[in-house]
Amino acid sequence: MDQDTDYLELLKLLSRYDFLLEQLQKTMKDGFHNLGRANYHNKDTLRGRYGSDYWDESYEGQIVVESQEDGSISIVKLALEDECEDMSSEDEKVDEKLHQEALLRKRNQSKQRKLRKIRHREPLTMFGGVLSVPTSLRQCQTNFKGTIPLMEELVNCKLTISRLVEKLEGHNGVEDIKGRQ
Image (cartoon, rainbow, N blue to C red; front, side):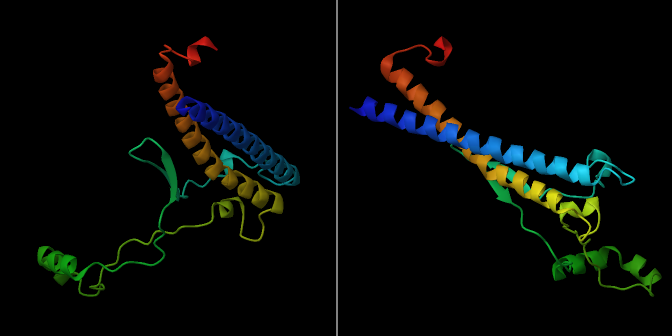
């Protein structure tokens, strides 16, 4: 009976995996379709197609993949630092002691130091101003951003399927179910 539930669970996971692959395919297809439309509408401009020659290399990624202890992954959006941060008072005291002579020589400069402000911008602004980005390019971005949770779910589903197959191989004494395909 226990193996029957494992096989039923495997079938449910395979069905889920197939459904997720179909969703990923549709979302990617829509994204590339919208990118093609954006390139078509941009064909008469000086730069031509949207691509790597447009990139300004100043965009910092805001999404990272974290691996869990059980092997699964999760996709996490990084916290944004919107404002300048003042140095803590302890750091200022240590800094003032170490650089007292330098501060005395630079009397006209501000004594308060600030950390570099990190600007987090919308990546689409590198392809023009906020208002000049075509709607199809915005839709393209939305499509491709929609694939991120799908990919996370696909990887975790595949991991669960692999574990269940290994468990079933152990119960049945079969060397390798995957090798006979």
